[in-house]
Length: 368
Image (cartoon, rainbow, N blue to C red; front, side):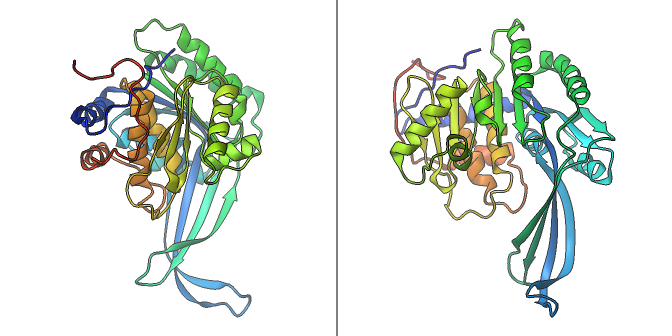
């Protein structure tokens, strides 16, 4: 299940832009099966009123509250916003939070694979944001209500059996593992083997975003850990050390046996690692003054999944994911990026002088 080798077009080559725009146009016909942890991101907004006399804390005058999809739900919302056809598989509890979460999904998402369980509690991340009348509200505290983990074996088996038929009708699989135990290395291997039996010309990429178990997954297409997740997995520090970044990225690539590892680095951009290829560092798109990183990783992997499903090389997919990530961190809260916004970013970006260019590998989407 090999993806085309990355090709890095020459600086100033006009067809690079046309190639990326064509890939974005191709998102609309691609079907992505998103499998993973469904999390309710709750935002409570308040205006700073005064300091409490009971304790040295702020008293907030309640303004508004909203629940939006986090985790795999946010990834699916991003797939839909980018024009792709998202099918979402996950688990929610038979509680008020679960009902509000499902209601928050984009109408374009196929929800038939969402399982409701009475023995499961929908995980909720409550963020309380405070500010003045004329100032932007900032997060002051977060409260996490975790699910009833670990999952019962019968729930996992029933969930696996429900999603396997859907693999016959998808162009990419996105696995979002936030640690509930729903997405596991065993489930990933089952999916990989099922897809390997499909007879089709274009491979079906399987992409992974795992918060805590990155190194336990093997043989998938690609993963998108952030730098802190790589540091935690390997027990190392990267910071601004280029050598440490190179060693860490290559270690993850070798230990997971994946075709590519895309490490997201916040204001430092991204680093793409592929076997037997030089590392490619992609600088951040847009200003480095980030408004909110909530859910940015979901946007990145959603874009990467659609791009690979549309026929992109890893480098082309990473470029598009970098644009999307740069756009979404400028938005407050858990947000999405549209295909129109992504195309506009590609159009506006002409400076390729900061990148590491290579001409190794076969041409991709380039006329002779």
